[in-house]
Image 1 (tube, rainbow, N blue to C red):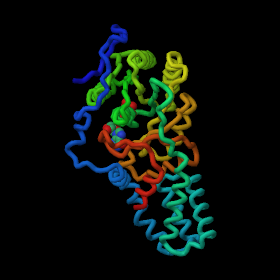
Image 2: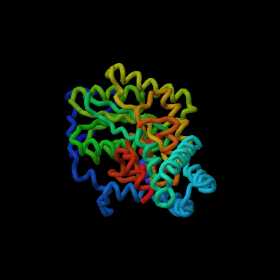
Image 3: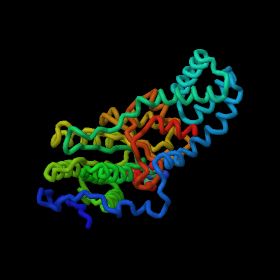
Image 4: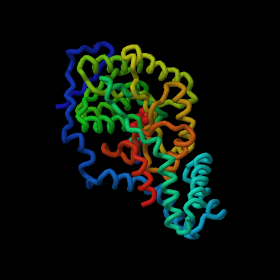
Amino acid sequence: MFSFLKKSKSTPETAEAVPATPVATPAADAPAAETPKLSWRERLFKGLAKTRAQWGGKLKTIFSRGKVDDELLEELETLLLTSDCGIEATQHLLDELKKAAKRDKLDTPEAIQQALHDALLETLQPLEQPLDIGGHKPYVIMIAGVNGAGKTTSIGKLAKYFQNQGKSVLLAAGDTFRAAAREQLETWGERNNVTVIAQDKGDPAAVVFDAISAAKARGIDIVLADTAGRLPTQLHLMEEIAKVRRVIQKIEPSGPHETLLVLDANIGQNALQQVKAFDKAINVTGLVLTKLDGTAKGGVVTAIARQCPKPIRFIGVGEQIDDLRPFSAKDFVDALFE
Ligand SMILES: Nc1nc2c(ncn2[C@@H]2O[C@H](COP(=O)(O)OP(=O)(O)OP(=O)(O)O)[C@@H](O)[C@H]2O)c(=O)[nH]1
């Protein structure tokens, strides 16, 4: 019933190989079946509980004064900084609040809270740019990030997400460094009933090259290419991933059509360095922010918005297959204030 394909160097890919039959099966939902099904908004709300807990009570106390004075601004500054908003975004939000207070003569806790809500929303809105996968077939998405950021898991979730939109997907197991990553991807592929192109050992660029050839031969809509985790300080590995990108361009000159950097939200402010370093090496076009459920550092999205604005294509708020969705600034901000 599954059609994933494990490929080795000695068995070159051909168009006649096992055809992909990318149809979601009930098995794709198996891990989620034991828990009650929550809507995405409910899961987002639950996922952001830690960040909200950090804000919630404190915001009420801070805003209870009912006027925007120096003391309020100082307390709010501390709260925003401890939520990992970063200095630049914190200053921006405080300035916006001061402006609104003057303009609209804010004099109730509710009005001040609403003004902060609106300033946050305005700051994050530009990052809401959903991925448009039209225009190229196959649409090649390269996934990068540091070790353990959630790349392989996100690929599994994305495969399901795209299948639900009626798209066929092929996975490239470009993490040839960690054997378990390949196995993990194959498990995800099996669950989602999609082909996985893998090699036991070898060159990640070659795996991705083969995967794109296979996708072209089979008329697949989307290639999701995994890569091994690496730190921006490991220069030889950054060069390796830059090579993967160059090799993609050899077989698909317009690709990769999206280069996603996966960031673990727990790293807070370090996210900024990672975006800058990966962007330099592989021209990052979008972000996936994972593990927002495990952190009180959700404020890092505002730091990203102000200091290295890249579209946040998806956010992850849990380990289940449905726990990754496109970023909606309004849903995100609402979930922080509800
Ligand atoms: N709670 C939570 N856990 C997540 C989320 N996304 C990924 N994880 C978990 O994070 C861990 C690491 O995920 P992987 O997908 O293996 O990370 P990776 O980036 O592929 O790791 P390497 O291959 O070692 O670089 C796994 O236990 C995942 O289940 C999320 O949104 N929330």
